[in-house]
Image (tube, rainbow, N blue to C red; front, side):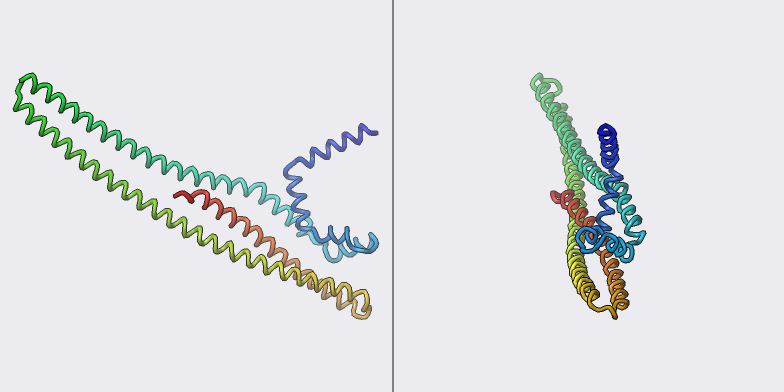
Length: 268
């Protein structure tokens, strides 16, 4: 018997280690916290609790649809968002790498030109010392040196223009991302305010429902009207909770996006 119990426990633990099962259970608990709290902490018989839950908290959206949708979004949409973030970071690193490579190549090319000019200059000095075609060779070397110097100056000017253009592009990109970060910050603050307003409305509705529930036990003649009013308030509360959940999800996405922008472009 003990062996069978251990095997069943092992099987159940393996099932609960599955990310799909764990995510669905967490989502289901978040969407159905009210009937759970009511069943655990409310006073009354088990039959009364079950009947009340069936009347006010029994709907397919909260029992199945919303937990399933949130589970699918968490398991399948989040990896794509992480992949998109990694792609953007990789793209930025590649652009910076190409720019740095171009600068290094230009520097190497300039050093090679200077080395060639220096070598020809030393060769000219050596030949002059040897007394072979002194004047003609010096004139040729001077022309070549002036030509190389002119080409080098042109190359330096082009490199300066290219660096200036790259700096302008980087500044424009930095301004764009700063503006986007400001916009995301504004949206984040608006979401915080909306979320706070929804919480206040939820607390107000909870107080009203509790007051009506207490009055319901003392006023038998108004029982039907009170039940209908409570049902309407429950529906309104359900709508507010759905809006609250949607705003909370949007709030988390906006916050994550803001942090990613700050981490990605904070050093630009």
